[in-house]
Length: 438
Image (cartoon, rainbow, N blue to C red; front, side, top):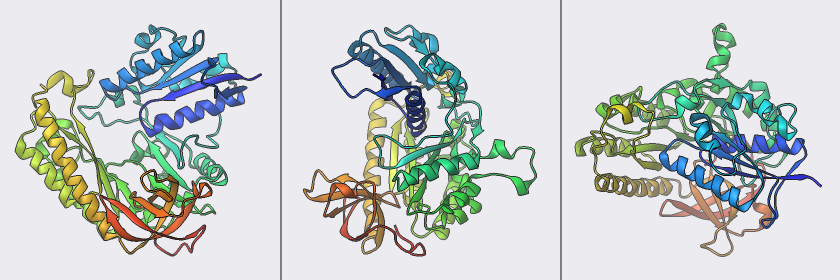
């Protein structure tokens, strides 16, 4: 009988990919994922997050819960928290193995029967879209961020390996591939170092190779710096298989706050790049991250952020309240001087603006035919399917059947409600690629 494994992931898309990669390596070594909730697993794996104190706390809670629910199990802990403070995690009840250095992943997994690395994943369990990690590491050292200290080495995967992996996932039935990395826009910089420009490998070169693959699928990019949405990349994004959606991290619209954050752009530079995107792509979806209440942020500086978000025509804003992160420049050198109630009020104002802009953007797409990935049934509307359009908007339409899940369908939209589009399904399956869909 196969040994069993339970896996828990905290944090980002990269962590989720890495958990799937570890799962498939363990399966090759003879493990099967535990499905009987009443039976302890032989091995538990927790992939931790350390981007915030809350991430640390949730990681510790997951470890303690698994130890209690799986008495006598071997407990393997990996991820960013394991890299930052392996001794603290090793001291937790039930932990038997901490992987602090993921570059030694295969060696660290040898006690569990893993003998060699895999060239990539073949599926993405629990998801209707597949995340593909193409790059690791960040060198920017923003003053509020701990990640460069736990993922300091920039490593890009060879393009041929990524293309083969994406082809496997398409063959397995995935119709959306999300390219992700710790600093996605730096993909290929290390591969290109020391080579003549004609031999460089950058993100747009990778997109060109992926869109040449056969099949009815689409590619989405995860977050980028605005300056990295350069003309070469926008040219590659004009291909019908690439989602017209860019997540461009803003963090603040105040030049003074951006300087203190050690971000490498101004609000004006950010807006200029967004204008270029709108001029190049067909009604692109722009989403972003914003931190409110960074040390010293005034009401006027927060208003500058609101102005940049509005002028950028954002369709989604992920809002975070600043909290000091031990080990960062901001925590060491800046006083957290914005009151919690002020942060909460600013969060709500941004979310109110997001709701307004999301509805406006959704309304602008009413009447268009959109390329929608079906993700499941709409619990709020019996008989309706829910899915996501190429431009990252939620779409609902009648006629759900389980066979539609993970398929791409064409939906003509007729109305928008609170940033969600409603419409009617036209057909299932491939469509002519020259048709530019949402």
